[in-house]
Image 1: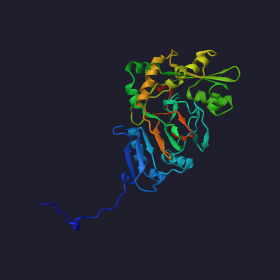
Image 2: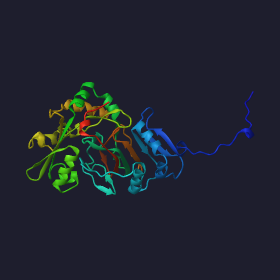
Image 3: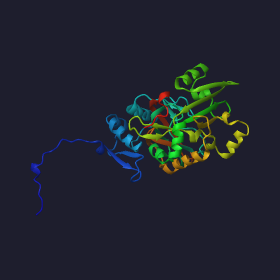
Image 4: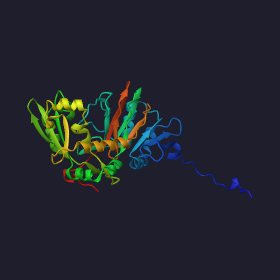
Length: 348
């Protein structure tokens, strides 16, 4: 006997358009949590307007996935991109205590790292060489390159889990010492890094954040700072791999470049280098193993113009692949987070 429904007996419910009806959620690959892809399910949906009423919902998914890719929302330029960030997180951050060359585009939106197109930028967490960093970082694809130029991402929780216990223990106990030498000829000047021409301002900043500094002959500056190798996420309580030893260490340089620099400079005079926190050398094979894990965990997808990638900076690392043609990806950061010196080394 067929079931029958009496339509007159069905009460009409009030219409309630939920997040799932306004947007579509999907993963790039089945079972791969990073990133979550969100696309509009209705034509003309404003990303800013939708985000304004779904902040907590977005935050919940970001903490689960580590990154969200907003696609096909027709974001109109860097101003709208900046407004979206403000809607989610309020005031954007200045790019201070820099480690790479960038230019200010408008407001507090910057170009992504301006290294040569042929160069691969290894996966890393933004400002993990510091005791202060942004909790969130966004990327906006204004112009996709002809080839390559992706922004690989990786789950920092998984990176931590995959690193061998003996390597992790060594880094947790000793931490990481970052040494930087600023000059007019190699890497960045201290004026660029600290965004000031006043030595007193540099000294004030360094004292404030626990950086040792030394003025050298010829107006040159050297800084030293010990930072954790791992960190505990303040909301999830999960431990993440969070340092840039593999970027700062001399072994990250191309062999020819490394040989040229070391033929004229001592190791502690290199533009940047990394050691264990007790000043002992970090073994190159250890960093090679870490780099290999980053490569294996990298999630790579082609940019589409108008894409907005939002990352929890502690949960997800990012990088850049080489590219050809013109590429314009801009960056914004927000939600400053810092740890006190007496908390260094603490993990769950």
